[in-house]
Image (tube, rainbow, N blue to C red; front, side, top):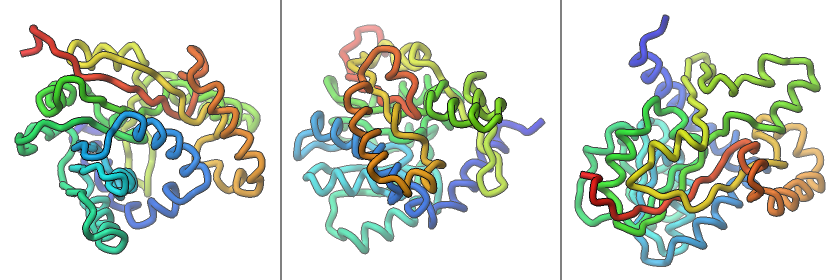
Length: 276
């Protein structure tokens, strides 16, 4: 059996190993842009110019640089040295004056973040928190870092992805079709093991309570397929446009919003007399 600490270390090494290729593999892919575009729309609806945002598991900095282009300052953290190095290189190349500060800091160590001005919002995109075994201490740290009324956008991989299940069932791979349903899976990335957790919406709400109240849940990639189908979907741009159109119309429906590749949860920091 592999120790928890070893799995966590291997996860960081795995993300280090793909950092230089991550933008090519996902960020700039047609599926990646389609899924991220839906999230960006939600962020711009919630965050005003001048806002000060904390980003967890920032990866190569795509979201932080996007927010900075809309006059939103960002402190962006990640535990992977490779990802932070790539993010800083991107900033230097694309927008050296962007109001973005990239910090090498694992999500589990948020308590080490300098506690000055409270943040106006939080973002954790594309499954970063799925790699955290216990959300409770992370939420505790977040509650002390953000202002009352602040929005927290948490994008998590779902426990059941309809498109993924149908794809693998069609190809006769029943194990992969239901790989998420046990709630935890070990995934190989560049030959290294990454432990991925798939909490239910109820479990996430419990972890964020009572400091945060859930305002909305939106499916990301309900019709748009997971990113590993990029080679196939790239051949059919009209199909992808149709799937994006469908997503916009069904992603808020109560059942379907939990059956996408991801779910985007919008929490609000609330005043709580029993929090501390």
